Every structure is written in structure tokens, then in C-alpha cells.
Image 1: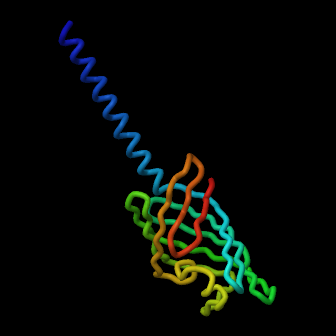
Image 2 (image 1 turned 135 degrees about the horizontal axis):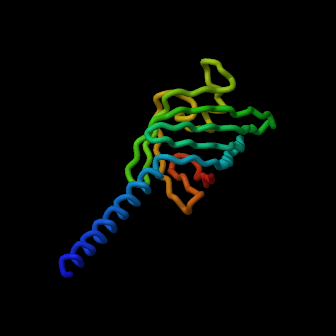
Length: 156
């Protein structure tokens, strides 16, 4: 009887350990496999940008899709239509991205100066690094923040 009890205790301990390891692995997987959308509002003395951004993180690759418009002080608007494919690495809540390919609705080789003044180079050019921290607030909301660009609350 005593041997039987020891077997059950060992079985339960192994089951608990496997459950904990499995949950930690799943949580780690979720940190690099998610997608969400958010809004950015940027205001400078002579420019206002209203941009919707969608991020898709899939393993070590991802895409950022930006849509919206920038309005200058002369009330001229410029549409934003950028797709940025990137690779990334992660250390805890810190994400290190590098743009691989950037597609724009303008399709030209030159970048509009208004965009250069408004968006970080990561969203405009290939091989540009970008860093931000992502804090998961709940099961469907993340906060993206960095000192170099506005914070974004991103939801599924």
C-alpha cells in the first residue's frame, strides 16, 4: 500500500510540473504570436497625423500596416498607406524590430518630406531598426511604448 501511495505522489508531482512548464511555454509563445490594431494621433506645431496601425507578430517576423492621413498647417492632407514587413527579437517586454521591406501607396523611390517629419524611419525605409516595449494589459489589449514615438493601445 505504501508503494502505491508513493507512485500516486510521484505521478501528481510530475503532472503538476508538466502543467507549469506547458503553461510557461504557451505564455512565451503568445508573446511572439499575436495581432492587434490601434490608433496614433500625432500633433506637431504645423502637422497633425491620424493613423490607424495594425501589427501582426508571427514568431520572428511580422508586418505593420498603417492607414490614415497627415494634415499640415495649410489644411492639405496626405494619405498614409504603408505596409512594413519586419523581423524581430524579444527580450522580456522589449521588442527589437528591423524593417525588411516597405511598400507605400505612393510607390515612388522618394519619400514625401511630410512623412519624413512625422513617422519614424522604420515605417518608411528598409533595414531600419526600431525598438519598443510591449506590455500586455489583459487578454486582448497591449500597450506599445517607446521614447521615440507615441504610445499605442493595441486591441485584438
